[in-house]
Length: 296
Length: 310
Image (cartoon, rainbow over all chains, first blue to last red; front, side, top):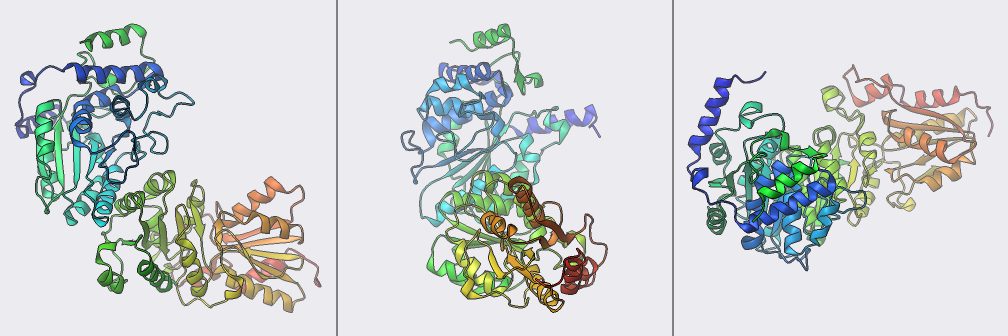
């Protein structure tokens, strides 16, 4: 049964109230790096003739700050054992991951123009066997937290400082498996595990508040035994500060970051527009309009 | 069989630091010695099989060899997507030890019966499926699992099953064991049904019908070479399995014969019907209900009208 409009707005109000980070208008406009990474995403969308643009654009700053300033990874040696691991559990947002991995030199940026093509290694969901820098093949939702938990335990067993970051969608955490993993991670006090929820408030059909309300989301993670912080997921400086504060509860709790984001962030007509959740056969004129909004 | 397999995991863990154990919510005392000796490598993670499989995948991605144990139905149906994606797509060396394959949990009803487990797992690329015949073979099987490169499903019987295997036959994953030389008839069986097929062959011998038994402890990868060689020597093949006919051992044999033989032997598949068992009782009761006692197997094979004398 659909929620009534009243309950939807009540849920959104609760979501807003829970979020103490700066209001969107106070957040600086996207800088040239954020725009450049988004243009790479659009190169993929254009080359493949399809793609989950909204879900990729909401995660750009999260991934950018992680790869630019947080993750210990080596593009020349993707399998370096001591590395940190990042799992894009919301595998449909893969264009964002491909953009930053290409930018970092894991593979040539040109490959993005061949996205989803028959013999490309960049498919519509990331494949760990094919893409340098991709740790796990995701796309079926709700798998990343458990795999991340296993990797975090493995790092501990190896007495290795590797940290594990799992980026989930918000619709994705409808999956019960996420909460199974959450209980287990808390039991093991895995402070080297960080779950980042890309909370863009929209899933495929409608607002998350309407389809299956997640609120009170931060309290949910707290009650599952996580140390929780909320942040504007497009505020590069705020993300940087937060990631540098990890672990939030050393030796005691795994970490959850609720990143408040905007689906389709950076392109006015795509923002919060479910038509841009997944797009195929985008007309050339529309693609040009997207590129124009992402010009420096 | 279960105790043997878990004891083997502990023995392997002593010798190999890569071995870790994961259980859901197993019986009290399970692998206590493992837990106290290697607490860091022992995980009891609760009734959350999806998480259990994903977690095992993460551990395997970073060099560990996880042995995961719970009841067969919950290790297959409940977390099928995690098994398919996390284990098979990534082709990770995770071993699933499945308690109560087939009708073992007869008194508990159809929610607890694993009647299609081998079929659904056999359909997954990279997955290997094995069902040893007794505890002695289980010991040899477990030793062979350590270095198997991909995911592996190990189907357990009830335990206390009569020992019919022979150590001299050895054990190699993917290689069948010819337990009894065929005449015109060959039983092809897996798991504890190989013991029943041997008993059925004895009964047939008394009636002048020479029947052999090819025990395929490994249902996938199928020992095609042995099957094709023997298929050319016999008139009739009877497959016997504690599994629905759709997708199991009999299906695998039928597929092989259809694809590879211009003139295949007559094939009769014995197994469970296409319905959830409607009775309780014991595993033996249900096997009798579905025509899988040695006497019933012998009778059904004999009814194919083979000439006596081999």
